Length: 190
Image (tube, rainbow, N blue to C red; front, side):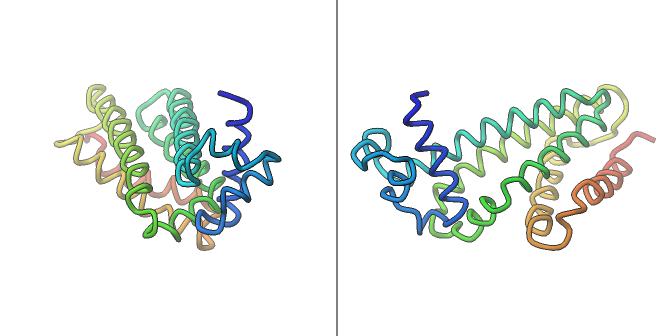
């Protein structure tokens, strides 16, 4: 990627996280990146386009981190546990960004919804794969893997907001492990 384009994306991400999409302007990004607005518009037509690129880049990095966490596990349970913990820690690291997306969700519904759908599809496929692995090894007894994966993804989504806005933020690992223990009890073969 072009160095100038990369600098724009990096600076924009910092400004979006700090001030939100609405309060950040192309002029703000250009000024902080030490380039003219015309240079900014050469690479991006709007701040929404810059934001889309920020989200795309973060999504690629996030998915790579999740896949690496899964690869460190030996059993399906370890792989799922590693996935959940990496997911929650990554989102915690991006908590100011996450809160900004939540706060501005309505104004950018179509745009943010598309990015969320992409991640939800990735998560459903990943969880289905891990659950199927457990079924094939005789570790899990699941009647409908896709439905179970979807329900599991919904549970994870439900944990995000409390983790990053309440006092639970320091107990990510503990709370994740408690939830997983209950999940595994319900799906493990007897």
